[in-house]
Image (cartoon, rainbow, N blue to C red; front, side):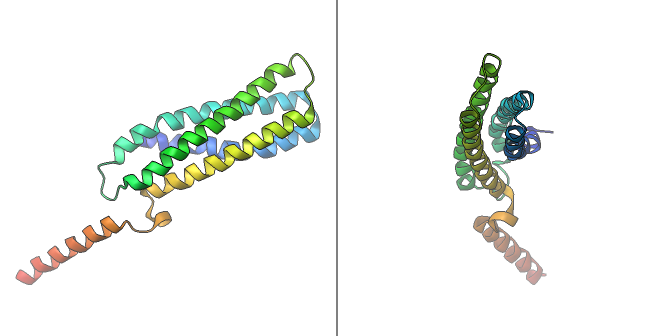
Length: 169
């Protein structure tokens, strides 16, 4: 197992986790329970922390595939830039969750402020995560981006050489 395997295994956790965070957020505010709200705050912190290993294994995943046929640096760059933004959004949501968790032990927090802030932060994070995941899928998945023109040209040349070898026989 290499870094690319690890990256592919764990990068889905924050993407799916932040998707589930939004309904959990709505559920907690509909029940008006301080304990459930604290669970949401802890979930936001945990999801932000889960984003770090996915981000940190990205460079090793790049190194593992950059010499493979069909690899395109032009597909990787947008994914890396989106990952930077997704990490900042996830850590922002985690920081907001940590702040609200800490404050919740000293005083009752205004519902609109905490709900609205976390909802906006999590929707921004979900957007950034979804875009990052989409761009990441395009790096090696031809079913998403279509055939690589370079690899198609290489396959055509290879087929020509094989047919010329057979013609010479």
